[in-house]
Image (cartoon, rainbow, N blue to C red; front, top):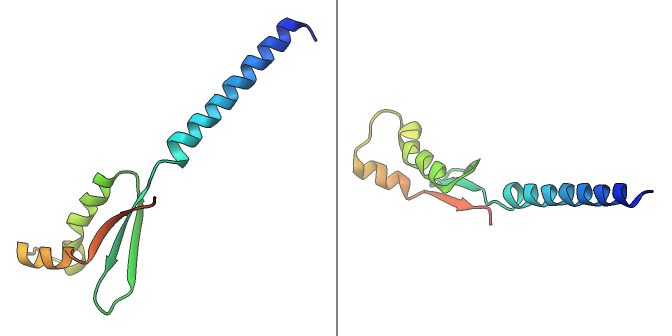
Length: 90
């Protein structure tokens, strides 16, 4: 094999390796967030995965109305929100 082709092949292999490492770092090692709901005398419910903690928190704030139906005042919303938490996977 000519040295020129060997150098091109080595650079191509290095680029493929770097691309695989970048995919691993950005998609596999990134933490995911799960919304865990534990109501008294009920089973544990886990929702997710969410890509960011902000998206998990947005769902957590809207969940009391989905569970109870209708509009809730702040006292009831706070009472229900005590049983929910956004938990990172790492």
